[in-house]
Image (cartoon, rainbow, N blue to C red; front, side):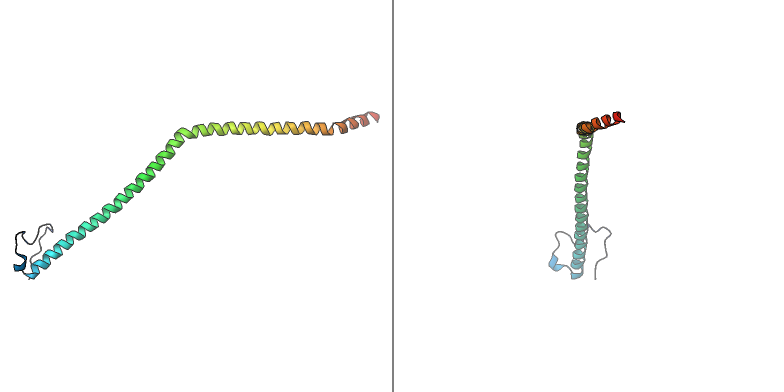
Length: 124
């Protein structure tokens, strides 16, 4: 006959000093079942703990990356923005310099034609 189940699974069914070869098989099997349940609970707790530990590690890694980005934004973004503004201003200067240079070249190129047109206009 199996023994009455005990409410607390942590309480052993067999005393520490008991002679195992003298105990009925049903009690031994009940003790085995009780220990298996404890081990199963331990395995489940270990699995959950491992999953939580991995998640915490992943979250800490993501947090560190975000902190690095924030630091970069706080420190480097303002300087980069100033640099980009200077680069844009310099590009504008180069564009207008190119337009002025083109105007000078075209004026030089067409000056003989303009001189002829002016002279032809005076004739008429």
